[in-house]
Length: 193
Ligand code: IMP
Picture (spheres, rainbow, N blue to C red):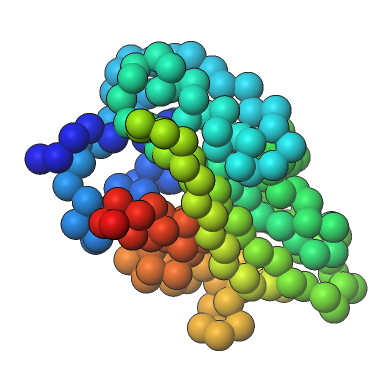
């Protein structure tokens, strides 16, 4: 096994997807998470951009443990909401669960024709230096929530080219097309240089 890699996240869905993408690309690192290190510290994600927040998270854990660290800051950008919730995706309508949040978004967009939306993912990797990678997936806000896979906004993120939502796409397929995959694959290619 190659060297350790600390995933700077406590989001189990993200961690699972990152682990699967890295495995599929032969990255044989021992993956650690803050939870595995019994770390309960909190990162204040008050950056203005995904890149800012990715850096805040990676730096926080790298400063603490001096282990090569990879963070993911991501979110959904909805055209009709002028790219919001964007960096605030995790905190949007915080008191509600995702089925409620998704229903709210679809309700607010009931009479809206421009349904374009994207997911964005910014990765920050800190080892000997600091590196950034970005990935996107483009789609639309669905008119009804569908699918059981994925997490968060996936049931209302419709992919016209596939005729289904991201929550209907099998996890192994999501991990070959997602914003997270598109960012991580850039890191993987950089490692191979
Ligand atoms: P972060 O942990 O601050 O980067 O927030 C990420 C948030 O963006 C998640 O909690 C979700 O709301 C949303 N998000 C990011 N990636 C995905 C995805 O792949 N599927 C669904 N929601 C996502």
